Length: 147
Image 1 (tube, rainbow, N blue to C red):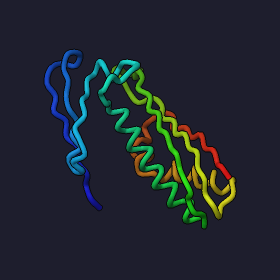
Image 2: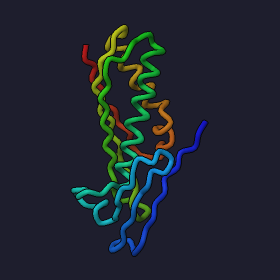
Image 3: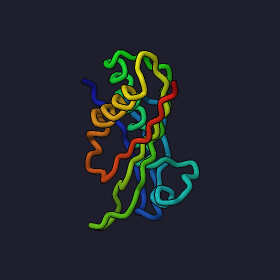
Image 4: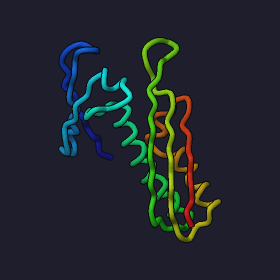
C-alpha cells in the first residue's frame, strides 16, 4: 500500500507565526495555517489540522461506507458526508480533538434502511481514519437514509 506525504513549513512563534501545508504526494496545493486562526471561530482563508482531519475522515468514511453497502448487496446512489472536528482544551494541558461528528445523508438501492444504518455503523468502526482517531472521546454518527 502507498504512503502519502504532506509537508509544513513554519516560521515564528505559536501566536505570531504562520506556515503553509503542502500536499506533496498529490501536488494539489499549498494552504496557509496559523494558530490564532486555528483557534478562532472563522478560518479567514486558512486551513487547520482539524479541517484536514475532517477532510480525511469524511472521504475515508465515504469509501468505507460504499464498500460496506456493496458487501451488503446494495448499490450507492449518493452519499453526502460532513465531518465536524472540534478542537478543545485538554484537561492534561494544551489542546486536543474532543469530538468528531459525522453527518451522513445517503441513497442506495438493493438495501433497506436497517441494512443501510448497519453498514453506516460498520463503516464508522472500520474506516482507517476512524481507527487512527480512536483516542478521540466521541466519534458521533448521525445517519439518514433516503429511499
